[in-house]
Amino acid sequence: MKRLLPAEVETLWTLFTAPVVWAGHFVICYVAVAIYCEKALVWGVDFDHVRLALGLFTLLALAMIVLSAYLAWRQWGFGSGEPPHSGPTDRDRRRFQGFATLLLSGLSFVAVFYTAIPLIFIAGCHL
Image (cartoon, rainbow, N blue to C red; front, side, top):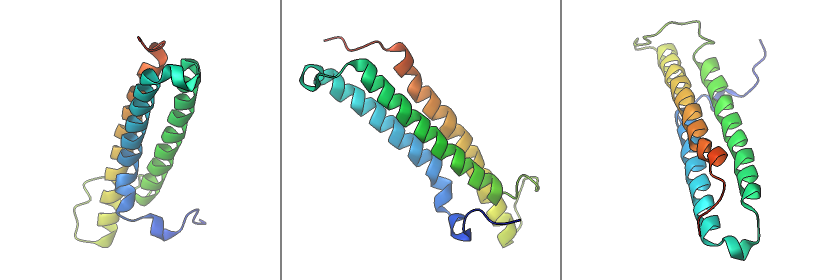
């Protein structure tokens, strides 16, 4: 089977990718809405445009987390090994890291989704 990505992708940094994407999404969404609500008259932009931009940003964040989950699933061995991966071997370490990254990716996916839910229900700012 041909490798889609180089082996260097399977490092400890992959473990932190999905939570960092969620944290960045959280900060950008809430800061963007807070700044918009404070400076709505200065920007001259409708809130629907802000919601649309943040919705597209949410889709981008979810796509990055799905990519992280795919890399983790691949590192785990495509689910071929059942946990626990507690052996003192390099293979078990990679599989444990892949499994942990896959779980963090799932949690981060749900967190991004829940962070974006207010964009659906908030109609604007109360000035």
